Length: 628
Image (cartoon, rainbow, N blue to C red; front, side, top):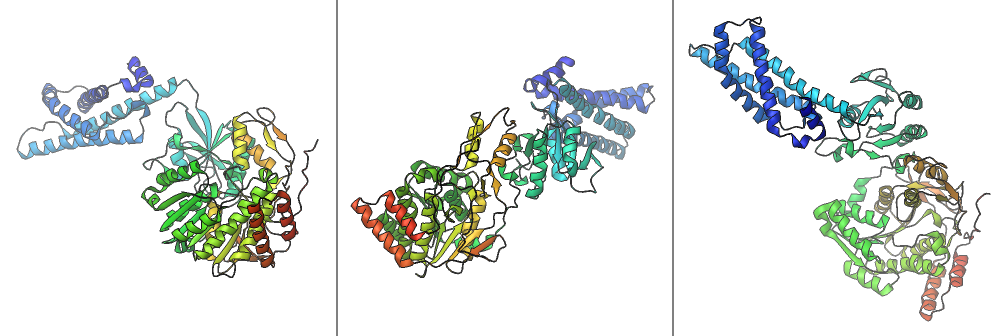
C-alpha cells in the first residue's frame, strides 16, 4: 500500500485510472459489508447474509455506473480537493438513488427488498468516509513526503479574492506555499480567522511579517489605492520579502486562479500615484469611424496609440515609422491583442523628414486625426547631433502639419515632453521648437491643433526602468547620474489616454499638461527595483554615480514661467495659458533651414543660433559631476 502511495506521490502519471477505479469500488464493497454489520449489530442472520450476496452484483453495477458517469477516477489523487470530493459524493448519491428505486419497485410488486434502506443509508455514509478519506490520506502522505518545506506566505486582503488566493497557493506543487496570516484594513475582519489563519491589521504589517517569519507577501485586492499599496509593499520589501500580485479576475484561466498566474510586483505599482481615469466616451466619439494617422507608430507611445485607436473603433489606422522590424512587430502585436480588428491597421515605412513623401501619403490616406509621435528623444545622443534633432523633431513636425493642412485634417496632436519647458538640452529645445512650429503653421488654419506635455513614460524604449532591469540582470552596477535627480512618471496607457483625451475634448488650439503628482527620486526608484529583484544594495549589487550628462536637469518641469495653468473639465488635466509667438519669424527660420540644408550649409551652430533666436529660456546646462 505504501509503495503505491509513494508511486502516486512521485510519478502520478504511472498510476492507471483503472487502479483508482478498482480501489474506489473495493472500498465501496467494504462499506457495504460494514453497513450490514452495523445494521445487525455485527451478528447478521444467515438470510441477510444471503440477501447481501445476491445484492452484490447489482451493487457493483450501480456503483460502477456512478463512478463512470461522474469520473471519480479522473483526478490526480495527490491533488485532490473540494471538487474531487463533490464528484465522489455525487457518484455515491447516484448509486444510492438507484438502490432506493429498486426497493420501491420491489415493494410495489410485492417482492422482497433487494437491500434494506437502513443498510443503504449506512453504506452511503461509510462509502463517503472511505473514498474521501482515501484521497485525503494520499494527499497528506504526499505533502509529508515533499522534500521542500512550505514557504510561509502572508496575503494582503481577506476578502473573496484573498480566500481564492489561499486555496490556489496551497495546492501541492514543486514550490509549496503555506498561508500563515492575512492582512486587512477592515477592522470588522481583524481578529477573525479564515480556515484557521488569523486576519490581522495591515497597519501592523512590518511586525506581522517578522512575527510569522513570512517570506512572501501576496497582494490579492483587485482595486487597491496605489498609495496604500505602495506603503504595504514597501514594508514587505524592507523585511526582505518577495512581493507578488494576483492578476485581474478576467485574466484567470477558465475562471480559476492558480499559483502560476501570480506575478512579481512591478515598479509601476510603487509610484504611489492613483491611475488617472479619463473620459473614454469622448475619446470613442472622436475616434470611432475615423481615419487615424500615427507617426512614430512603432514606438512605445505610438504603438499604444495605434492599439487604442483600433480598440475604440477607428475605421482605419495608418502607422508610419522608419524602423522596419518594430513596424513589422506592431502588426504581429495587433493580431495578438486585437484579433480581426487588426485588419483595419495599415503600416508604412516613411520618414517625416521627407516633405514630398508626407504630402503624398497624407493626400492619399486623408486622415481626420493625426497623432504626431515621431521624434528623437535621447538627450545625450541629440546633444552631440543637434542637426539630427532639428531635422526630425522640428522640420519633421513642420512637414507633417503642412501635409495635414493640405489633406484637410480635422485634428493634429503633437506629443511633446516636460523637457521642452525651460529646456537645457538640445532634445528639449527641439521639442519646444516643435511646439512653436505647430502654433505658427497649424493654428488659425481651420485645423484643431493640440499639444500635450507629460513626463517620463514607464517601460518606454530607452527609459530608465528597462535600463535598470538590464543592469540588474547583468549583476550591476546600476548607473545613477545624481543622487538628487527627480522625474515625473506615468504609465504608457495613461500617456496615450492623455493624448487621446486632449484631442477629443479640445475646443481650440491648446497646450495640455498632465498633473502627474509628485516627482520621483531616481535613486529611490533604483533601490526599490533592487529590492523587488530580491537583492540587497551594496551586497548583491551596487549603485554607481556617474554624474549628470550634458543637457540633463536635476528636476524636470511641466510649465514655463511664461505660462499659467488653467483648469479644464478634468482635475488632472490642466491647460497652459500660451505666450505669444512670432509666427512669421518661426516660418522664416524654417524656410531658411530648408534652403541651407539643400545647400549643405545647415550646421550645428545654425541649430543653436535658431534656438537662441526663438527660445530665450533655452540655457544649455553644464554637466554636473557626481559627489565625491
